[in-house]
Image (cartoon, rainbow over all chains, first blue to last red; front, side, top):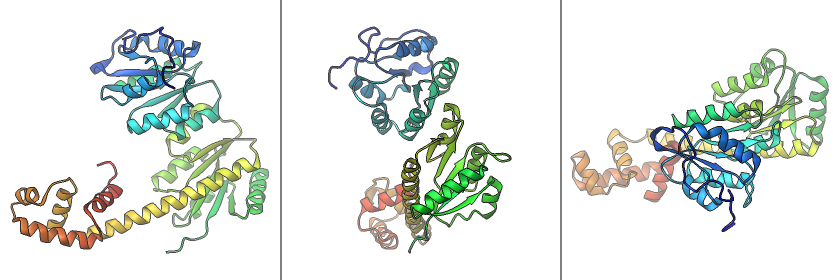
Length: 140
Length: 205
């Protein structure tokens, strides 16, 4: 798990991607470097303070901080199964909105994510707007 | 107190599904009652009866999701396993957000359903044990005098007797006496146990 890059350096750890987030709260994106993770980051470009930490450890560390608005699990993680990661994140922040992105129609994965602590599961494609709405609600 | 026997309630408008589930559950030694409509189940639903619910999402009249919401309004704790032939992610998410225990898409393997039913029955047993525990704590809390309740609240916030005495404007000796009564009435062996009891009845504080 240690040292395994999550984002292949394409986004700087802790760097703002774009946009206008309220109260300076962070939106954390987790997910291996993939087309879907990039689509999620692109979808969230309207918000400032979107971070894509470089490792799972860094993601969990940031998830435990006070200035986090929500966590978006964009894609599979290299280091561990999403359900285990969800439980760890939920342990750190009981009330944090956590959104999981799944493939369309993967009902079993959606149910599993909900059972392990996701606030909502969003299928991408096609629900880019739904993701923005959920994140906007979490920030406000 | 001995638990009542558990029953699996099946609510599905499809006769064939109801019959096959009844047979499957019976073959696994699980008591089962089947209903063809949500209203029929709600008319006889008894919250005291332990078990779980296997519920079809789409039914004429009241849907499975509507029935789940009605049960939530009634404060039901019965674990609900949804079954559906036309499930999609928004539907599954809605069901889980409203507290569904599981969501299963047809067709499913018999063993898959039996495993989930078993887990749901275990969850129901745990829920009922937890509720009985919190009911007992609430009963003990009701025996405290108003002053004892104040002392309880302050000591479980971590305040020492001297600070409690200062907050309440009484002597430390008086606080010690109230505290001893609280421990006795609450049947607590230690302050840590008392704190755990208070967390059990108000877990978000």
